[in-house]
Image (tube, rainbow, N blue to C red; front, side, top):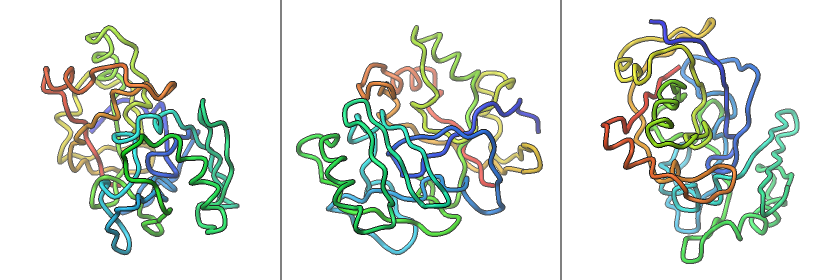
Length: 234
Protein backbone atom coordinates (compact mmCIF):
# COMPACT_ATOMS: atom_id res chain seq x y z
CA UNK A 1 0.00 0.00 0.00
CA UNK A 2 1.06 3.63 -0.40
CA UNK A 3 0.65 6.03 2.49
CA UNK A 4 2.57 9.14 1.49
CA UNK A 5 6.20 9.97 2.21
CA UNK A 6 8.15 9.82 5.44
CA UNK A 7 8.88 13.31 6.79
CA UNK A 8 9.69 12.91 10.50
CA UNK A 9 11.47 10.23 12.54
CA UNK A 10 11.32 10.51 16.30
CA UNK A 11 12.54 8.28 19.10
CA UNK A 12 12.20 8.38 22.87
CA UNK A 13 15.26 6.73 24.45
CA UNK A 14 13.69 6.81 27.92
CA UNK A 15 9.96 6.10 27.91
CA UNK A 16 8.02 9.23 28.84
CA UNK A 17 11.19 11.26 29.34
CA UNK A 18 12.11 13.19 26.22
CA UNK A 19 12.05 12.95 22.45
CA UNK A 20 14.75 13.14 19.80
CA UNK A 21 14.38 13.81 16.06
CA UNK A 22 16.44 11.65 13.68
CA UNK A 23 17.50 12.15 10.06
CA UNK A 24 17.42 8.42 9.27
CA UNK A 25 17.07 5.06 10.97
CA UNK A 26 17.60 1.38 10.17
CA UNK A 27 14.65 -0.86 10.96
CA UNK A 28 14.99 -4.57 11.73
CA UNK A 29 12.38 -7.31 11.46
CA UNK A 30 10.59 -8.01 14.71
CA UNK A 31 12.19 -5.08 16.55
CA UNK A 32 11.22 -1.61 17.72
CA UNK A 33 12.74 1.54 16.30
CA UNK A 34 16.36 1.32 17.52
CA UNK A 35 16.75 2.73 21.06
CA UNK A 36 13.10 3.82 21.22
CA UNK A 37 11.79 3.31 24.77
CA UNK A 38 14.98 1.36 25.42
CA UNK A 39 14.75 2.45 29.06
CA UNK A 40 11.83 3.25 31.32
CA UNK A 41 11.62 4.87 34.75
CA UNK A 42 9.86 2.52 37.16
CA UNK A 43 7.95 4.03 40.06
CA UNK A 44 8.27 2.76 43.60
CA UNK A 45 5.03 0.73 43.48
CA UNK A 46 5.94 -1.02 40.20
CA UNK A 47 5.42 -4.77 39.93
CA UNK A 48 8.07 -5.71 37.39
CA UNK A 49 8.90 -8.92 35.59
CA UNK A 50 12.01 -9.51 33.43
CA UNK A 51 11.74 -7.94 29.97
CA UNK A 52 8.70 -5.98 28.81
CA UNK A 53 6.26 -4.48 31.34
CA UNK A 54 3.01 -2.50 30.90
CA UNK A 55 2.98 1.28 31.17
CA UNK A 56 1.22 1.38 34.56
CA UNK A 57 4.58 0.61 36.17
CA UNK A 58 6.33 3.71 34.87
CA UNK A 59 6.53 7.47 35.30
CA UNK A 60 4.98 9.03 32.18
CA UNK A 61 3.23 12.12 30.85
CA UNK A 62 -0.27 10.83 31.56
CA UNK A 63 0.50 11.04 35.30
CA UNK A 64 3.11 13.81 35.34
CA UNK A 65 2.40 16.44 32.68
CA UNK A 66 5.71 18.26 33.01
CA UNK A 67 7.54 15.20 31.68
CA UNK A 68 6.09 16.03 28.27
CA UNK A 69 8.38 19.08 28.04
CA UNK A 70 11.59 17.03 28.23
CA UNK A 71 13.83 16.83 25.16
CA UNK A 72 16.57 14.21 24.84
CA UNK A 73 19.78 13.42 22.99
CA UNK A 74 21.22 9.90 23.02
CA UNK A 75 24.92 9.16 22.56
CA UNK A 76 24.63 5.57 21.37
CA UNK A 77 28.36 4.85 21.60
CA UNK A 78 28.55 5.92 25.23
CA UNK A 79 25.08 4.77 26.27
CA UNK A 80 24.62 8.27 27.60
CA UNK A 81 21.48 10.41 27.55
CA UNK A 82 21.18 14.18 27.86
CA UNK A 83 17.78 15.46 29.02
CA UNK A 84 16.67 19.10 28.86
CA UNK A 85 13.65 20.68 30.54
CA UNK A 86 12.57 24.36 30.58
CA UNK A 87 12.38 24.40 34.39
CA UNK A 88 14.95 21.81 35.43
CA UNK A 89 17.69 22.61 32.95
CA UNK A 90 19.96 19.88 31.57
CA UNK A 91 21.38 16.61 32.85
CA UNK A 92 23.67 14.06 31.19
CA UNK A 93 23.89 10.55 32.63
CA UNK A 94 24.18 6.84 31.82
CA UNK A 95 20.86 5.06 32.46
CA UNK A 96 22.66 1.72 32.86
CA UNK A 97 25.07 3.06 35.49
CA UNK A 98 23.68 2.64 39.05
CA UNK A 99 26.04 5.37 40.22
CA UNK A 100 24.18 7.90 38.06
CA UNK A 101 20.71 6.96 39.34
CA UNK A 102 20.57 9.18 42.47
CA UNK A 103 21.60 12.25 40.48
CA UNK A 104 18.96 11.54 37.83
CA UNK A 105 16.20 10.93 40.41
CA UNK A 106 17.11 14.20 42.17
CA UNK A 107 16.80 16.06 38.84
CA UNK A 108 13.51 14.33 38.02
CA UNK A 109 11.69 14.54 41.37
CA UNK A 110 10.39 18.14 41.05
CA UNK A 111 8.61 17.17 37.81
CA UNK A 112 6.49 14.52 39.53
CA UNK A 113 3.30 15.88 41.18
CA UNK A 114 2.79 15.52 44.91
CA UNK A 115 0.80 12.43 45.77
CA UNK A 116 2.13 10.39 42.85
CA UNK A 117 4.35 7.35 43.30
CA UNK A 118 7.98 8.47 43.15
CA UNK A 119 10.36 7.22 40.45
CA UNK A 120 12.79 4.68 41.91
CA UNK A 121 14.80 2.89 39.20
CA UNK A 122 15.60 2.70 35.49
CA UNK A 123 14.90 -0.57 33.71
CA UNK A 124 15.30 -1.94 30.19
CA UNK A 125 13.26 -4.44 28.20
CA UNK A 126 16.35 -5.81 26.46
CA UNK A 127 17.93 -5.65 23.00
CA UNK A 128 15.51 -4.85 20.17
CA UNK A 129 12.57 -4.59 22.55
CA UNK A 130 11.49 -1.15 23.66
CA UNK A 131 9.16 -0.60 26.62
CA UNK A 132 6.34 0.35 24.24
CA UNK A 133 2.68 0.33 25.27
CA UNK A 134 2.05 -2.73 23.07
CA UNK A 135 2.95 -6.20 24.29
CA UNK A 136 4.82 -6.90 21.04
CA UNK A 137 7.77 -4.98 19.47
CA UNK A 138 6.12 -2.09 17.64
CA UNK A 139 6.73 1.18 15.85
CA UNK A 140 4.07 3.90 15.87
CA UNK A 141 3.21 5.58 12.59
CA UNK A 142 1.10 8.71 12.26
CA UNK A 143 -0.42 10.87 9.54
CA UNK A 144 0.35 14.60 9.31
CA UNK A 145 -2.86 15.24 7.39
CA UNK A 146 -4.91 13.85 10.27
CA UNK A 147 -3.03 16.07 12.71
CA UNK A 148 -3.62 19.11 10.47
CA UNK A 149 -7.34 18.29 10.28
CA UNK A 150 -7.62 17.91 14.06
CA UNK A 151 -5.68 21.15 14.60
CA UNK A 152 -8.01 23.01 12.26
CA UNK A 153 -11.13 21.65 13.94
CA UNK A 154 -9.79 22.54 17.38
CA UNK A 155 -8.55 25.95 16.24
CA UNK A 156 -5.15 25.17 17.72
CA UNK A 157 -1.79 24.23 16.22
CA UNK A 158 -1.01 20.82 17.74
CA UNK A 159 2.62 19.72 17.89
CA UNK A 160 3.60 16.27 16.63
CA UNK A 161 5.31 15.75 19.99
CA UNK A 162 1.98 15.53 21.83
CA UNK A 163 1.52 12.10 20.23
CA UNK A 164 4.99 10.64 20.85
CA UNK A 165 5.00 8.81 17.51
CA UNK A 166 7.98 7.32 15.69
CA UNK A 167 7.24 7.82 11.98
CA UNK A 168 5.18 10.67 10.53
CA UNK A 169 3.86 10.46 6.96
CA UNK A 170 2.79 13.27 4.64
CA UNK A 171 0.70 12.93 1.49
CA UNK A 172 -1.92 10.42 2.72
CA UNK A 173 -5.52 11.65 3.08
CA UNK A 174 -6.58 12.67 6.58
CA UNK A 175 -7.71 9.70 8.67
CA UNK A 176 -6.99 7.24 5.86
CA UNK A 177 -4.91 5.32 8.44
CA UNK A 178 -8.20 3.97 9.78
CA UNK A 179 -8.21 1.66 6.77
CA UNK A 180 -4.62 0.47 7.11
CA UNK A 181 -5.17 -2.20 9.77
CA UNK A 182 -4.14 -5.61 8.43
CA UNK A 183 -2.26 -4.14 5.48
CA UNK A 184 1.44 -3.60 4.76
CA UNK A 185 3.26 -0.30 4.32
CA UNK A 186 6.62 0.01 2.56
CA UNK A 187 9.01 2.76 3.68
CA UNK A 188 12.32 2.55 1.84
CA UNK A 189 13.36 -1.09 2.04
CA UNK A 190 11.33 -1.74 5.19
CA UNK A 191 7.86 -3.31 5.14
CA UNK A 192 5.62 -2.60 8.12
CA UNK A 193 2.62 -4.73 9.00
CA UNK A 194 -0.14 -2.56 10.44
CA UNK A 195 -1.41 -4.43 13.50
CA UNK A 196 -3.60 -2.24 15.70
CA UNK A 197 -4.70 1.26 16.63
CA UNK A 198 -3.21 3.26 19.47
CA UNK A 199 -5.47 4.29 22.33
CA UNK A 200 -4.75 7.89 23.35
CA UNK A 201 -4.36 9.24 26.89
CA UNK A 202 -4.36 12.60 28.68
CA UNK A 203 -0.67 13.13 27.85
CA UNK A 204 -1.84 14.41 24.45
CA UNK A 205 -3.63 17.31 26.16
CA UNK A 206 -0.25 18.71 27.26
CA UNK A 207 1.77 21.32 25.38
CA UNK A 208 5.21 19.66 24.90
CA UNK A 209 6.89 23.07 25.01
CA UNK A 210 5.59 24.08 28.44
CA UNK A 211 4.49 20.82 30.06
CA UNK A 212 1.07 22.36 30.79
CA UNK A 213 -2.31 20.93 29.77
CA UNK A 214 -3.90 23.29 27.26
CA UNK A 215 -5.91 21.33 24.69
CA UNK A 216 -8.93 18.97 25.04
CA UNK A 217 -7.55 16.51 22.50
CA UNK A 218 -9.37 13.47 23.83
CA UNK A 219 -12.84 15.01 23.70
CA UNK A 220 -12.10 16.35 20.19
CA UNK A 221 -10.95 12.94 18.97
CA UNK A 222 -13.82 11.12 20.64
CA UNK A 223 -16.40 13.52 19.23
CA UNK A 224 -15.54 12.49 15.67
CA UNK A 225 -14.60 8.90 16.56
CA UNK A 226 -11.01 9.58 15.53
CA UNK A 227 -9.66 8.50 18.89
CA UNK A 228 -7.08 6.03 17.61
CA UNK A 229 -4.04 5.89 15.34
CA UNK A 230 -2.46 2.77 13.81
CA UNK A 231 0.45 0.95 15.35
CA UNK A 232 2.49 -1.21 12.96
CA UNK A 233 4.89 -4.05 13.54
CA UNK A 234 8.21 -4.03 11.71
